[in-house]
Image (cartoon, rainbow, N blue to C red):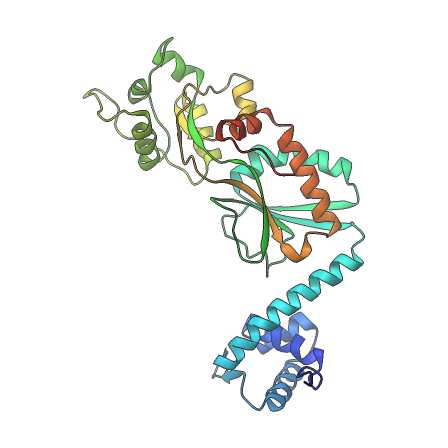
Length: 315
């Protein structure tokens, strides 16, 4: 059986993949360093060889035909795999490691440790992005991501479990004093609480607290987008918040916060290191993976949570 690819130049597939991914001949030309006319010519030549249209040309945009969508899926997978293989073969371990990471994980856990990675790997510069958007690691220009999830199953990605993301009550010294020497979960109804009403309702339900006294403060009035902001607000106001004891281990150790109860919300899932499967051997990714797992193993707070859940770290 003859090879159907024998009559199709790889350059044409490369141009088509960019145009299909970006849904724009102009942007594909910019990405590939070509003219828009050259992109259009390559696509028309490919359509002629296949004897069917791959794009519908609309007044101000292009759209894939059903045939184009089918070829685009295969072309993207093939080009991604090819780029990864070439990158692995030519990778010197130097360059920039781009990391997309959850904001609280970035500020509370990763950033204070990244200096050690730079010392161990001075040939690698690090670019850290902690925006709220979910990055597509198969398409966007990031090498690795640290994500939250239940099972770490994302198409095309290899994911390594780090530690649980369970959250619990974190209390300031002032709040601990207000609750007395032998605090009970229901005592939290009488101190100022920072965070979403839904999270607090879930925590109280897990603690078996079903009713509030009539003189209890109103539901939490201050909420924020991240654990970091909510816990910082609680610390500033002498209140209580909800957060991960791993993320705020330094504050607990220093006495700025306490964890009065072994009662959690969101006690499923955890934090994962993720990267494209076909790039697992890239030297900078492998170096960061090994370094990160070493630091998880060396973190007593992370190890306590892993032991509590009976989930040892993966090698």
